[in-house]
Length: 133
Image 1 (spheres, rainbow, N blue to C red):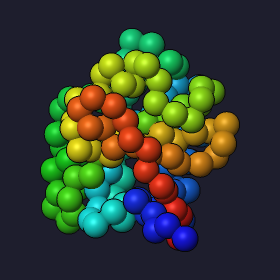
Image 2 (image 1 turned 30 degrees about the vertical axis):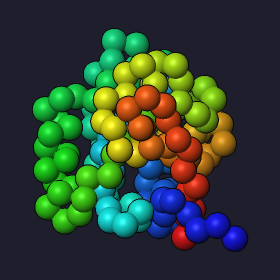
Image 3 (image 1 turned 60 degrees about the vertical axis):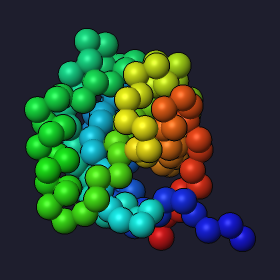
Image 4 (image 1 turned 180 degrees about the vertical axis):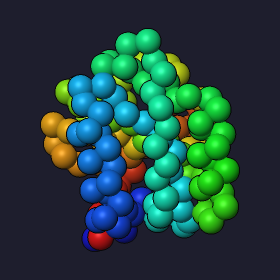
C-alpha cells in the first residue's frame, strides 16, 4: 500500500467540511499549515471574489495574518477552498490563478464530502494522495 502524501486528522477534516457547508453556496477558502505532510492547522480567510459562488480570492491582509498564525506553530503548507457544486478537482480558473509553486492546494468537495489535494508545480497541478486518520 502506498503511503499518503498528505494526512488530515479526522477532526480537522470535519472542520474544513463544516466551513464549506456553512459558506455554501459560495466557495470558502483558507490557509493550511503542518509539517512533514501532516496538516495540523487550518485558518479560514474571507473569500473576496466578485463571484464567490464560482471562484475564490483570498483576502490579502487576512492571508498574511493567517500565514503568520500558522507559522507560529507549524510550516505553511498551502491553501484550501471549496467546490460546493463543481467537480472535485482544480478548475481552469484555479490553474490559471495558482501562484505558489510547491504549495498544496486542497479542494473541499461538498458533492463528495471529502478533501482532495494537489501540489502546484508552477506549470500544473500534481494530485496528492490524501488520507484522513
